[in-house]
Picture 1 (cartoon, helix red, strand yellow):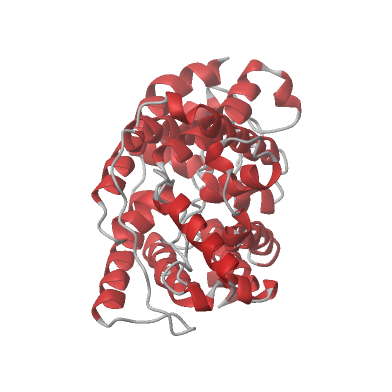
Picture 2 (cartoon, rainbow over the protein chains, first blue to last red):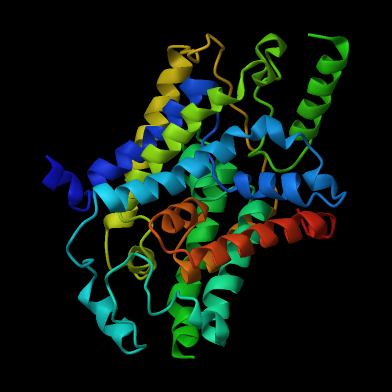
Length: 187
Length: 177
């Protein structure tokens, strides 16, 4: 059993479990599954700066911060108790392409060749970590949600704006991953 | 509950419903008597437990893997499409069942759903998020999970995402919606 749990879980196990987060959060406290809002609550709590968008009682939404803190803890538990000892399996085509950019380390889900403290001193690292993060935070809030709020929760509740958002962020991802990211990785 | 508290509650609800960001909503608006404020803080620990489970699933499904995201956007693997597709299928069935069977929360409150209203941010904002997703290989949930796995440098990415959210809030009036 433990051996099974340590292996990467197939999509038909993991996907339905993720889907069950929707009713779980609704039933334990009437909460809509969503994660990017937590970033807004942090802004509202720490630097509201009289911006109307951050003038609300963030303490009422504090469940969301407990939830994301739990995700950090879950990440820690998963690697320390259920860590997969084998290297990560990646499509050979992608592996070949990444090798041409010097990305060869498959020990961690976050490629150590790209995301590390030294890289923050290079243009490539700044784009990957700082600019990338900025786009995620800015874009999700502008879109009114991320993969969890729109693609999972919104689509579960058959909201067409969420379908538009999901198609749009998949489109944005396709464009950058195929056309722009190769240029960044060559830097 | 005092009149003052009820007013505050109403104000909070109005702010959230008039806001184009429909992800945040007042959860107590229908039922003032069972306001979260009346619950001690440790009631929130159940959300931390839910987060822990979700974090473990994200890791074991390799959803937080930068490599998996690249495979998805290059159509080199079915995995991510299978995860998202089956999650949505289970979500749709769950929401249908909750509505049909009028399932209540564990506190006996009716479960609320808020319709999302379309605005242009659903396109422009989502495109921008997609750009960032392809670069960082992480949407907001995985950012937290990646930090948990020990990739501490991702704190920089998360911090930058918070700044991005703040900048959006600052210039929100000037952006097309």
